[in-house]
Image 1 (cartoon, rainbow, N blue to C red):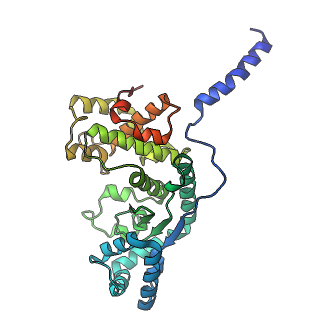
Image 2: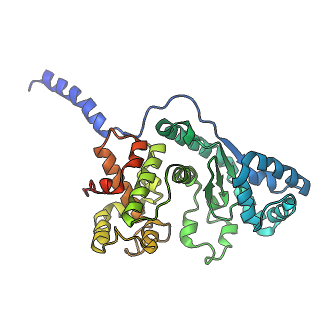
Image 3: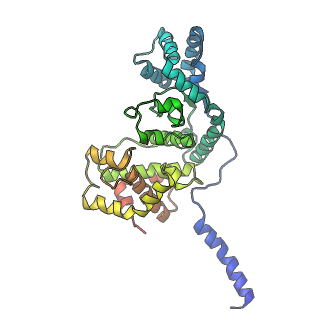
Length: 334
């Protein structure tokens, strides 16, 4: 091949390699912004006088509705009524909650950049699922470390779950009440990831009571949709793994799959199997001590990603309707 022909061959191959290596989830978005209202309910209730709490509480209830009232009822351990503002005032002025709120205030300056990332994520989801996927409101309220909850229209976020684990107030909590693995997850860098994940789970997926394999594939679909919301994020971030955890999962993928097959666990319907392989914790129960938690989620993500690689024309809404056994049949370990 002469020099001129070689140049033409290289130019011909450039778009081929580009198309092979390009990210199918990094789609072109329209320029219109999403409209999400961010409200800091903690800031409206903490360090306020009794009358201010009463007034702000009424305003917040009108803005935020049932999810907000539910979160307050969990905090004061009783139904919220017209006189509850007194108990809520006492709640925010108790020593322990005051200390938590003081630590949370240190995070407030960081919230705008995370909210920008949340908005960006919902622009990607809107591209795939339409305007109805975008929540109307996201609000911050003390959830006593229960992290995030969703209604049909809004998302409640407990920022105390993102306080630095090295802060004095967190270190003062007994390890029997807040385990080390829970403290290790307290990182505000994951705020947008956790918010969007919770919303995807509630809005796009129904609860399952089936075989472990069904739960693994559903977890994989959820994470793949999450990846579509953050198409340029590292996979370790999508899976909420530290780099060494992600490397362990990649290295031991085949061994974990073989374990599930040999132990005939994939088609079991018991709660323990699902809990051990899908839930957050210090590790994945049944595997070695250095195995990260949620290895069932990792497998599901890899299986679904492989399926979508083989079915490039399939849209995300179409993916949600594909039966788990069809996806499972395509699984190949490199």
